[in-house]
Image 1: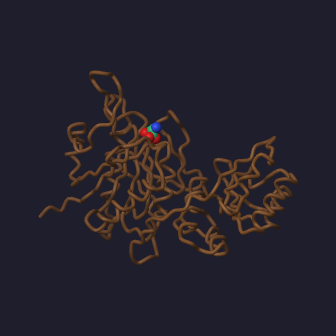
Image 2 (image 1 turned 180 degrees about the vertical axis):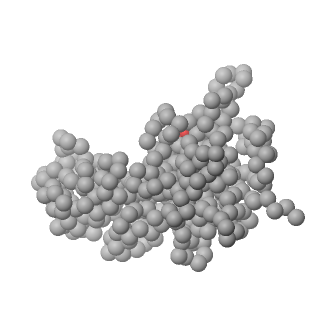
Image 3 (image 1 turned 90 degrees about the horizontal axis):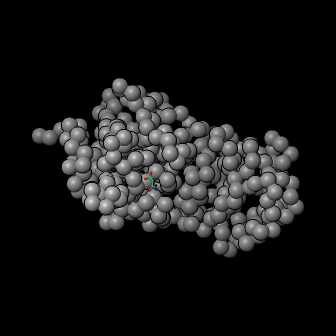
Length: 343
Ligand code: ASP
């Protein structure tokens, strides 16, 4: 009997799956069915690996809601047959996909680990091999009770495992490309992999639930000093844009600008939802702490606590896709559904 843990790798695209073409010198995606010839060390892992690949691997900037659905469908179809899943994905939008999957696939009892690399796996100084091997090891890891140790969507990059919906890409060129500024790392890889057991997410749901229909009737408005709000009037149209994520200053502050105040008041009055997140890399929104955020509290802007922008946007897409009422969405935005915020 083969008792090796079984891991399914899903290759969506990105730098990790690229090699140098000897003839042209260009980087191009290799056929993932031939992964063993590019990374023969995978055979030494004592893990049974299977791979599936997008028909046309894509740069992660091209990822859409349809691709999240496709990844979700592949996982649901194979959920019972594997101990864990590794998704190979470009790093640029990995935090969005990780956040989206955490809302899309609830009740997880198995790991879904996203990884990628800054240098192609076929280059000498690649970070891709370590990222790939350790992500696979984490996806296969069992706890003392024989159950998968990690039971959530996570991002593994450069010796660190992060909760997916807490992660953000922070560097375009460093190997240490991710951080989860408001939540501790779930594991740190050194000679051993040191898991922070008490911080691993555990679902209260009995079974896996799959919610693939996301709605993108939302907008993101980042404040900046000197902003002319009249230019943004078209955003505050609740018929087309059901919710707006407002990236504010510091702990949730905005200028006391009459145009902004009027736009927000009317928009919320018409049933629009506004979620206040900070544009700082870390920390939390506390509405009412300063005079410059008291107005938000008064008119019903929802404080996003320490949620990342990536998680805020995908949470809204998920909630709007589920056809909740506006009131229900406002309530759920203030709850942590899958560990995405600290309350
Ligand atoms: N542009 C690439 C992508 O996100 C970068 C990477 O693979 O990390 O698909």
